[in-house]
Image (cartoon, rainbow, N blue to C red; front, side, top):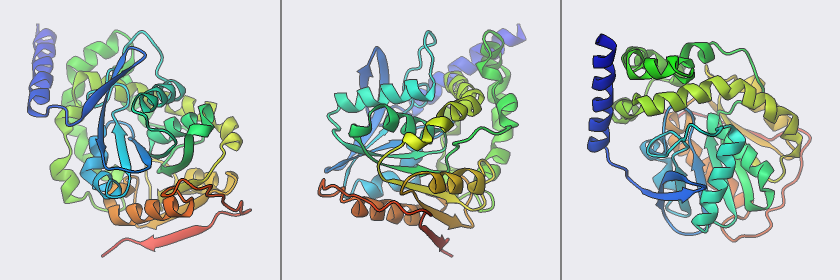
Length: 326
């Protein structure tokens, strides 16, 4: 009876949360899946792809969405299962599957040729989209990404709600409570060595992330991440076009040295910007530095004018290092 009561309570709590926080954007249906997206601005299209456990609101909260929308048409999607996007259980949701769905949504919204800006788990989706439809992706901005598989303790710790049957019980009963208890520690780890910014502490919608539906998506993506990186790694040499890699030098979630720096070295013409004193959430810790780097990259590839934007393939990536503002 206690489990039933907890399940009913968490279900009702999720519904209350959704009433308090209605969708901020619009919806598009692709291949039978309803996706939520937020859109602002005019001009060439930038598509923002968020990481694990969050939604398109992550870019809104950081300020990056509004900053880029001053000069570009910016579309930020909720990936399947996050925010208000559906994640049907009768189909796989690998990075490639998610990429194909977002490409379909971009076509439905007449996005044309676009630059993808992605964070964390979203970088896997962005790179799969580029590999799937290289002529439609003008360039990539990859922040705090994970590109080669490693042993990860978070997979067994956070992947429970994705286990069939048992996971359903967990995400409707114990997982929301455990998530609330763990959240301060998770925030600290995500931002370390920087402090958790006040705008994030006050503005992050933790109640949305702890809904049973989003817990399942978060757990599934956590469990799949090493496998997805393993599938992508042999294909990295096939990534074409300009790429800007960004990372915090103190990232505790994915190693800057073994992931971002390595990727920039291996990609043809890859460039890297390492933000000193920042952790995994670079777009929140140093939003202006990130925005200026993205805008500079777009100018360099002539994305404002739709020009060719050919770039020199350096044997070693150019590194720009800027300290965090005081």
